Length: 329
Image (cartoon, rainbow, N blue to C red):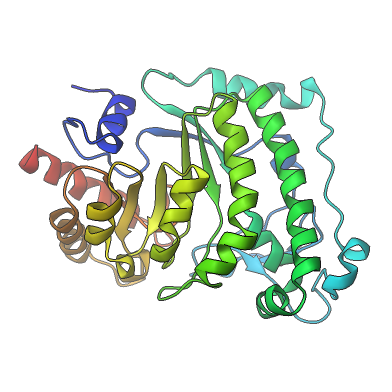
C-alpha cells in the first residue's frame, strides 16, 4: 500500500495510485506561525476583529468563513491613488525564539507519509479587495491601473519576504495558498487583465517557493476559474483546490491533465448545509468520482481546508470516498 504522500504523487503524475487521495489526507497543514499568531482573526459566530493590515473581518454563523466589513467607516484604502497613506504592511521581524514552537510542530510530522504544508492567506487579489472593498477594487483595475499595479507590487514584495521566512523556518514540502479569483459562474476580472496584473505577481511568489525546496503549490480558489487554468500552470500551480463543478472538470482534466491536478468537484454549497444527509453526500461524491476518473483528480469539498461549515459533512464525504476506492481500485 502506498503512503499518503506516494499516492498523491502517483495521482498528480498520472501514475498508478492505489486509491483516491481522500481530500486533504496527504497534507499535514501548518496553519500558524508568528505572523499568523499575531494577526487577529475573526472567530465563528463572534464580533468583528481588526487584523494586522487594518482590515475588519467578521465570521457570521452558518457561513464558511470570515469576510471584511466594508461600510465607509471600515474601508482601509479609501483612495487608491493615495494608497501609501492607508496601506501599511505588518512587520515580519520575528526572532528565532518566536518561530521555535512552529518549527517544532513541523519537525514532528512524518515527511515520508505527509507533505508538510504551510497555509497562506489571503492572496494578492483578495488582499487588494479586502483593503479597498470589492467593487472599488474592480473599478480601480480599469480606472486607476497604475496605482493598482503599485499596490500589487507592494503586496507582492511583502509576500516574498513572508515566503523567505516560511522557507527558512518551516521548510515546507507544499504551500496551500488561498486567493479566490471568481464567483460560481465567472472570474472577477478578465483573463487578459489577470494576465497583466495577477500572473506576474504569482510567478514571483510561486517561483520563489519552488526555487527554495517547495515541491507542491496548491492554490485554493473555490470559484469558476477555468479560463485562468493556463495561467495557473504558467505560475507553477500543481493542484487547483476548490474547483467547482461549474468549471466542467472532466473537460479540464482531459485538456490539462499532466500539467495540473484538480482537487474539488464536491460543491460545498450543494451538501454543506443545515439539512444535509448522508444520502445526499453519497450521491454527490459518487457522481463526481464517476465523472472525473482516478488520475489528475482529487475528490474534495470545495471549501478551503479540511473542514465543513456544518459538523459531520466533511467526515461523511471522506467515508464515501474510502468506500468508492475499495470498489474502483
